[in-house]
Image (cartoon, rainbow over all chains, first blue to last red; front, top):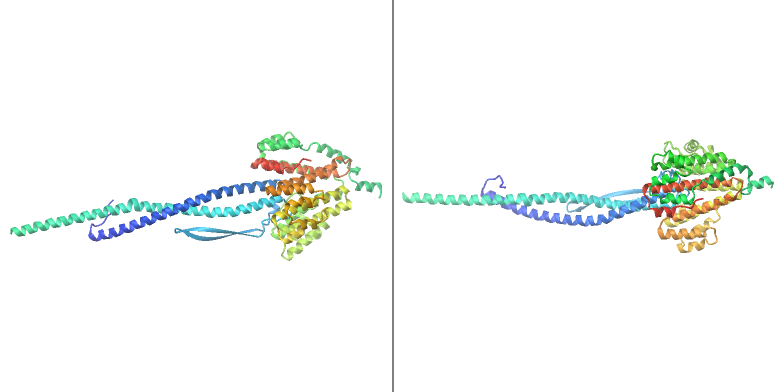
Length: 206
Length: 344
């Protein structure tokens, strides 16, 4: 589609500069998109294994916890875990990946997760809580990677739209407009030339 | 020593319990046998397990149940019935106090967390022991341990002192109360009980110490906890456990060779090393205790069969809770069978 502009030489020069910039932008965005895709695919590969591991560990930990709970007197677990002595702190930092501010979670556990005595509780309860604690570390890592994937996917979507807009709309429109202005200018030049030739002929007859 | 007093101190001789023992023998015959437990374990789901259970002593309670997921109500009702039976058949005040003190100490653990650590006034209820929960709560909030029996009062006094000094932790609370509890049990058994009760308390202390020992080896708590965790009064001295904390697992069986727990320690340790799970060890500990009280089956009289039945029934309720929990949340059958103790 031809842009709504005056077909002047100034405009032609301006459009030629614009198309150079648009082509450079298109190339950069295309490179960015490719790199984002590469990072996304790498992360998906990592996350697939991590998610399987987290699900397996959480399932195992909760099954162990439930079996340990069933072997104890009713109410023992609730009473024993009433005052937790472990604190899970989560520090959030940001790292830049291709203009994306991806989160970096650093989980730090202080204190002990075993906040009860030995009589009336069991070793299996200790083991299940420790397994949950270990699964928590993986869960934080999974959350960080899943959030990064979500941000990468959003950015890829945006970049793809920009690339498509440049590739299929702006650059063809600019090309068409430049072509249109060039043809218009050539035509004006030809008409000028023929007008001049006609004027010269009339002058020569008189 | 008079003949009457001697009969009081010799296991299975107290004829005052003649009626109680007769009734207990009849009730023991109705406990679930290993064949029924196996059928329950092989059930596809909780509904099928419930159907199998409906043919047993629990039939009446199962009929009142709308869904298998409400199995806990059956166990609670059966536990209520058990405690009523115990109160009805127990003829000795000291024995009732001794058994109910377990609930008092368990209630104190939760109440001290609520009232002393969290400073919460929130009402809390549970099965009551020898002392009402309100009285336990008041002793903590009003800082009046004198309201409680002597053995509880001294333990609460220690907790209140620690709280005043600002160094009361939930684990420390439990350890202080556990020490007081075992000291009370041992004292009561020595003062009033037969040799069975004294042996029972000592075996129980040993079993708790053995489990604590393996938990410490595996989870490495702080030194203060290590110092306080073991209980005196068992047949194995605390120093023995402390000396073996860093020994390699393969020599543990030999280190317990001279004790009655050789096989338990050897097999439990091997299973723990192989699987990283305490299930097998816990099963062996349960089996040992049940095997110990099984000797009361030959006692013609005395309060021992009553206590053995109380433990056996609680043991059965624990097994049912594990089975139904596993069937409800689809825990692997192998894991469940690995943990399932022997029946009484």
